[in-house]
Length: 161
Image 1 (cartoon, one colour):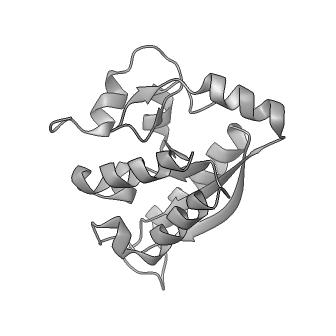
Image 2: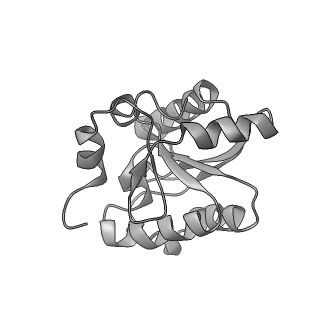
């Protein structure tokens, strides 16, 4: 993938179709067919809202509050049912060293969630080399990652709906 960031790839999309980050090394594709199929089998798709925005767990800041609100709004807009909100303190670049992210992985492994919502790529890790294995892991268990931050999901046609 080189040094191209996920955000840069998203901004280059010109189709206006929804995209998600999937397990195959940030491959971008439309997920309308997937979400239509899920809609036929249940009323809402289970999702986890993963928040990694505050440097202090004791006093959530504006970034944390925005991540929560944007994630909830994204879920409502796209027919996703948030089954858990998991919070980690921002600062650790290796996702597997965060207790909250390990819970997200376990939920995907158990098939409890099909979607992980987070605000932007850096919530997973500021270093792309640490994001790749996590996306691979989610994908192996049938889960996808979606971004709730408006500039990212607006470029993707409004998210997954």
